[in-house]
Amino acid sequence: MINTSLALTYLYLLIYILLSSGVILYNKWVLSPKYFNFPFPITLTMVHMGFSGVVAFFLVRVFKVVAPVKMTFEIYATCVIPISAFFASSLWFGNTAYLHISVAFIQMLKALMPVATFLMAVVCGTDKLRCDVFLNMLLVSVGVVVSSYGEIHFNIIGTLYQVTGIFAEALRLVLTQVLLQKKGLTLNPITSLYYIAPCSFMFLFIPWYMLEQPHMDISRIQFNFWIFFSNALCALALNFSIFLVIGRTGAVTIRVAGVLKDWILIALSTVIFPESAITGLNIIGYAIALVGVVMYNYLKVKDVRATQPASPERITDRVAKDWKFEKKSSDIYVPNDDVKTGGGGGSNSASEMIVDEEAPLITSSRLSHIGRTQVNPHPA
Image (cartoon, helix red, strand yellow):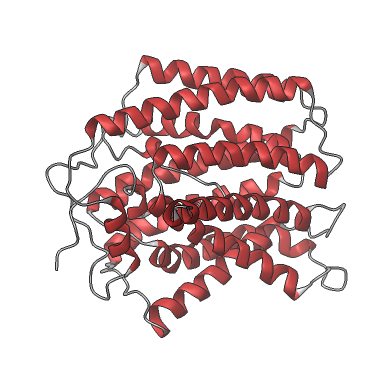
């Protein structure tokens, strides 16, 4: 007899992998001059942010699925705005990279994400410089360099865009910990979109007006409402699929699923986009980087388990409570003495967060605790 709960978990993992891969391939297809030919990455990102913001507004203000948090002007100005700025930058640079380099090579470069996050965390004082982690980061970096050397269609501009986007996202993760979590504020998936998506849209408007708007000839642009609607819908659905997956599994499963997704995506991209040829040196370099990433993930999960406090509450029970989205000020989480969000390699270190670059808003919410650190229930 099939275990229903286990089958549902695998279904959620499959949905996550399909949506995450689909969004990346869809964005590449829309932006590429060889296919849909809409070479305006900032515009596409603004469509995603605008759509997500509108949906979140209706869910919060109209249908009242979840209540907004107690957001003060001081928190918005000092936390939401800077986080939104780096979030918008990471999406802008990441989507622009699709114009210059292949999906397969982009995924190989994304192996640098743990390196960037660890470096930013050390610089900002939220993590400690450790010899074992540093050696893993060095191994990842060597692998990426080897993979880059083996890239047939290497493009320095596209590579710089992607790497800059990775570091912008890493800094956003660190800021999320320093600015939001230390203030005791957590956001669920809907309230994350509600506050951050509109602000990110406004930040993107400035580079859009300066860089893309002058080159947009309306008469020559191939606009298809259903293409952009379905693309934005997939990006939104990915955010919620990550929420489902994290609620059903632990950190190890998520990380393994992410690695599996990357390999599937690299293989699929070479089939869907024939010009995205990969070489043996690409694979060798990525394999070296992947070994470093796996070792890094192992160390982080080991650290989390060593510091995880015992709690009688099951993770599934905790997630069930989160899904109810209690219509009160339940989005304010006050840490207890057992769970610290401070620096020094604590259990909430930004470098330990589970990240999907196509839907990074989720990692700034209480979901970064689920499957890693159990916290006290919300107060009544």
